[in-house]
Image 1 (cartoon, rainbow over the protein chains, first blue to last red):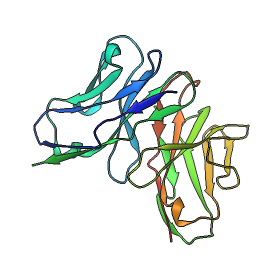
Image 2 (cartoon, chains in turn cyan, green):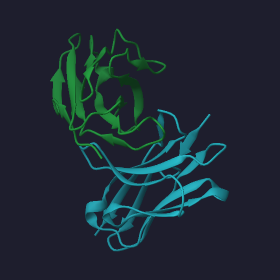
Image 3 (spheres, rainbow over the protein chains, first blue to last red):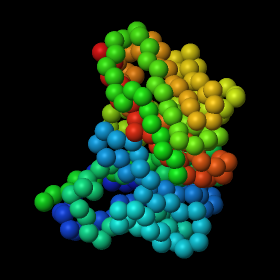
Image 4 (cartoon, each protein chain N blue to C red):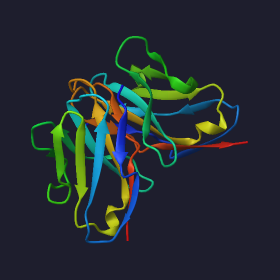
Length: 112
Length: 116
């Protein structure tokens, strides 16, 4: 069965520092991959997605993610974190059907 | 993309009562989904709702507890019936904009439910 793993429950970074959130998936082929962000009390907002092509994907708010087939990973990165980036981040996978599977989430804390 | 609104945004209810959550989309969509997000948890899919057919429920969720309506291509409701404190969660409506071929899901702002 397909699965999504976000190994880090929470991460703390200093404002202005770089960020990498990890995501690994389990699936026999290349799935469709997504990153969502959820600010406190809000719904989920799509940051970026990968369907095919260039393995480095640019998203909104200065985020990017890189698909690495050999590692079954889709890690999210940002070169310089802002205090407003503090939120919950969810990696998600869709294998071509109607069901999207979400990871457990990683909560990002940003310290001044 | 799609713009999704939900009503109510939050509610506090007494156990044993029911609450109906509305989801409105700004465009016609085939697939609509209802998720539950318990405190500090990820999203759990409750059911998938296609217009004109019965909703398809995931394991652990039943129609008597979570009846869903999907009267047209822009609207759906989820009712949480005979509520207990364990139903306290955020309920999220989501849509998929094309065809179920791995396209993107967009989410509403959620309904925060507290059951006393």
